Amino acid sequence: MPALDADAPKPPAYPFIIYRFKEQSETNKTKRASFLATLVRLIVGADLTVPTVRPRRERAEVPALELKKVSVGPLRDVDLTVEPGEIVGLAGLVGSGRSSLLRSIFGVHPIASGSVLLHGRPVRSAGCRDAIASGVAYVPENRADDAAFAHLSIAANIVTPRIPAYWSLRGMRDGAIRTDARALMRSFIVRAASSEAPLSTLSGGNQQKVVLARWLGMAPRVLLLDEPTQGVDVGARSEIHALIRRAADDGLAVLMAASDPEEMAVVVDRAVVIRGGRIDLHLTRNELTAARLTTEIHRERTEAA
Image (cartoon, rainbow, N blue to C red; front, side, top):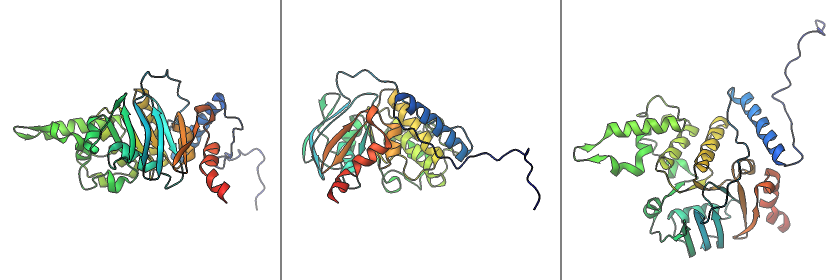
């Protein structure tokens, strides 16, 4: 065996890195985001945007979305507000009612009792069409079954909710559909050979960005997200996070359910924890860490054991 050259350069220490910030101050949250950006770059071989701490916004006079004593599925008497430009997280175990709450706001399921207000006005939704007309958009958890039309083109998937706007006396304005779809594909970083390619030819991350483009292209006032990065790679995950935060920076109110505490801690401004059919805990941005969320989400199970 040849002798080792003491002057030879040593191999880099990555990718086997263990790093921990003990304190969750604003400074350390920013440092942590920078470190994650470096780690992601090592994994995917490209610079990606990892969200940093968002500046605080002044409280609005009227919330964009307000729930008053809402009961649906396993949930009872839910009180919750989401302000314009705010991202609020729904945390809880599977079956806690996170998805049921989002679906009921969008009109998929009727609420048993209580009221939903948009910008201070009660919403008497008779279904999804009324919710859309009121400025509510919804990205469901199961993209394949509930959001994606895999056999249709990317363009058709993007404009689906706005199809009537493209009808004229001469028929469907296909050129306008393609033009609008391409613009949204650029804005939402959808990587595809053509807007006419079937959605099924795209990766999971690009399919999810198409779904986001579909709804955000309609300029909604409230966006409901259920597991927005489920089944996507780390690169698409970072881009989707950036798109969500860009929408919030433009004034959109976002209510997001996610089972990953790390994702929740990175993306949202504050979070609520659902336990025992009720909102049991509110976590402010300063209190919001992945470790704290994990502890609180499983506290009921731990105490029961």
